Length: 92
Image (cartoon, rainbow, N blue to C red; front, side, top):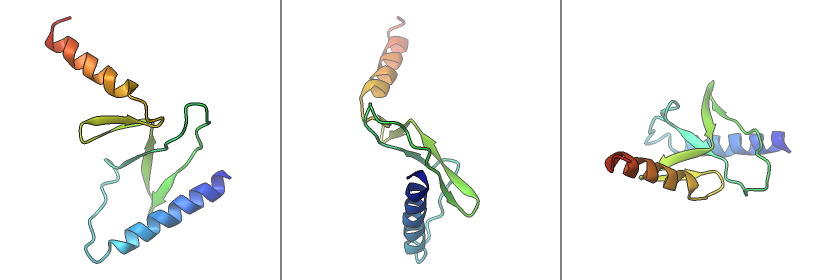
């Protein structure tokens, strides 16, 4: 199952990259991340997206437009970050 998932992700990624060739926006592989969304009870599948020897990192959470999104789509990471910022501001 993992091999077919990796193959499907790789093929989809290739279609996206080939479709953007006329305008070609280069992809910064150091900054590009992909969270694997799943339910809290499901196991994480080892998935890899590789393009021309450049891998896109699989992360458990990422920040997008100021909102921290984790792989289970819960608010805990976002709230934890806000609490840390507020505690620094209030000297707690």
